[in-house]
Length: 572
Image (cartoon, rainbow, N blue to C red):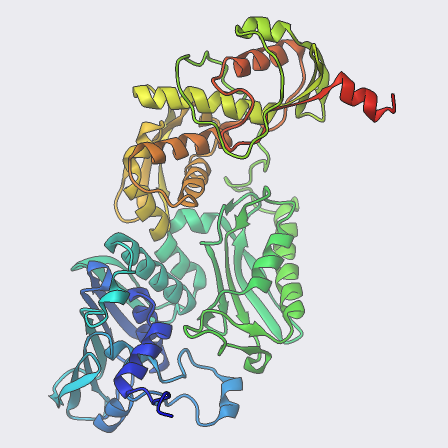
């Protein structure tokens, strides 16, 4: 007896806050959605120090009288639902009644609200969940919520937040999604006292997308014909053929005006673009999906980011059909020509075969079984130890050695050659760059921009000639020589995405090594037209490397079958 106790209201609110308030961006999302639900036509968002010092949301919505304002700060108090049955037919952004009390329990909180028909409003101040004052206010109609010192009373939670730039990037991305989902609401975003962006209210989705993501991004999209099938309406924009990125960061899925993560939609887009994008890339998309609220459940995630579809197969089919129809229309002769309508598969540049300087030490990649081949110490003699037999599958080179049959992977070999050469050049500060004919201004997502800023010196050290150009834009003046035939945006994002997956940040040697490895992987040849002279040159350059038997990722460059193994395979 006595082991089980009821939590105090303060602790219960902090537990709820752990589910609803993951980081400052979560606070912004909940409060802006409340403003939208209140019928706001204008919303102003301001934050400072990544949102930990200050978040302020002001709107011109319906406001609340004093009784409702106090009730809104009680857990599970909501104007959105009345019974359990209402959960199946939710048409608003928020509905659980946990956001305000959860946020107030972990911050210094101030709420000022006034209905349009009232002469005076109400101001409530709370610190760590405890009400400090309730007074009259002369504020304008609408609601203003101010959140200061987030997690001041939960230092264990605060220490798990990332750096200021990272948290700011999450807020920028969250606001971008909300603004795209609600173009009919004018929004303004301020950071540390400076205007980040403002978007006027519009009934044209393309205008809102251009305002937020820029003309370059908009030019890479094409509208899809509005379709409705099985009660599912699809409209919006999808990528032109060849326009993708290594992640889904620029796929916006808006279900009944709510931005959600929906695996069924992601899967159908990937399938629709299977022949229009290289493997591993995801199409850009801004999809607006409308369907009966009874056909999905948005009550499966505390932050309402994910939804459960009752018939995901119908949604997959609707999205696939709409995207495929847009792609087919783009490919017809009557489609207007576009500067982005270029070949999907560029011819890969030949691998650089400049001599790799010797006396450079490289660590052996783990978990790699090296072939047991006895080679002469001099590269020229080693090449002569092989008899080139021919090419195989446009990728491999067949060779006969003194001990048996050797199969060389041309892509892995070119990765190794590029890696060792680039690593030595980077260490000497001599990485070559190819100037672009015209500098290119690249607009990025806030998350990409923050990441590139944090790793700018390392990117410059491996040959990227780029500099900040205001906001989330960068001016690219040159690329590493081995990437000179690549599209500047694609090359930069591919390299960054590969490095970002390692979790490394900064300008130290681990970051530089990872960047060199990423550049060599992207620049490596992808397809090899066999000619004896070029094959022999590739083999010679590989055998000059410090570690010729493995690519930088640890995969083998050569595999050997001894004559004894071949005899055994044939039963001799």
